[in-house]
Image 1: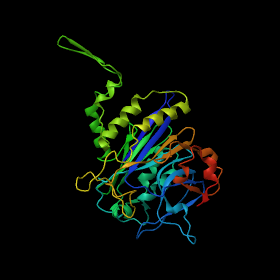
Image 2: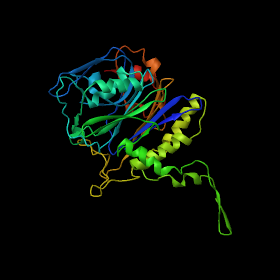
Image 3: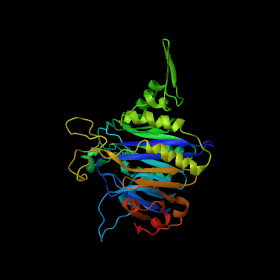
Image 4: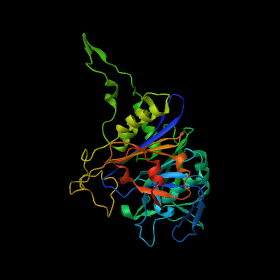
Amino acid sequence: MCTSLQYTDSKGATYFGRTLELDVDEPWVLAYVPVGMDFVSDAPDLEPFKYTSKYGFLGVTAPARMPTKEEPLTQNDLKVCEGMNTEGVTFSLLAYPTSGAPGEAVANTVEAIQAWDLGTFILSQCSTVADAKEQLAKEHVYLTRIALVGNAVFPFHLVVHDKTGAAIVIEWLDGEIEVYDNPVGVMTNGPTFPWHLTNLGNWTHLTNVDQSSAKFGSLDVHQPDSGIATASLPGSNTSVGRFIRATFYANFAEKVSDPDKAMLTLSRIMDNFDRPRGATTNPSTEGGEGMKFQGIGGNDSAPPTEYTVWTNMADLNRGKFFFRSYSAFNWTSFDLEALSEANEPRAMLASQLDTMGGDGTQALLAGMAV
């Protein structure tokens, strides 16, 4: 469903990448929201939770409703699935259908933020992971029911990184929030994050050093090629398998010193998690169905197949964000420092980037006003 990982170059600079896999596509909107924008999070039967953006941020968003001429989209309608702010904080929403949350109610509170508004809240309010932890400790979170996935109670967990290399995973267990420090900088989907860390103990044999010769009895054997070190990596695209592979590549990929070469290295790493349509299918009678979206049809009548709808990367120190959809050959980049010149939210459909590539900053600045 999703793979996120952190890469560090030889100078200690931090970079981040994630993929998003679904069996359908959505009208994704890339949006930049500047400083000073007012937000309201309306949880049912509770007082509205209001906040104003302290930091500008760029997000890959899913509109909560369809716009009309009379009621165009506002910044409150754009629900952030992925993003980065001008301070080098990233936010990622990853599918987590095993969250086990019993309900959405917040007891004995007069004000709460809806869980699906945490992307805009964290990116607009927090300059570090420590800030995010502090804010989450203070605020009540209402676990939004998501109509698009069968009215499930917020079937996601959240990942936050900053340019110091700090990272956290935010999950809900039986309706209670759990915030975990992430020492490996990697996350996929279920089971719980502590389970993934425990499972790493079963992979202490992993190394990037090829063992290309051996002796069996009196017979000397040799590999005719390099690459045997990856033979023990899990080959499946399950959440568990991808967590191990992401940890391997994040740790063992070459540590370069130049930021542009670091982004190139990260791009090569993320290619290992790029899934084409049809690589696996999900017959409804076989289990392993992942997250089922309602009201959005697939591209054809074939069995559902999860594929990499889009991938993004971020250079947290230089404030550069890169995006590539399934239909695109090339990455499109955005410079948050240049975007910060905007004095109102700007947005464009992700599909507009498919034939672009290169620097998309000016195209976004010239995009539709939100």
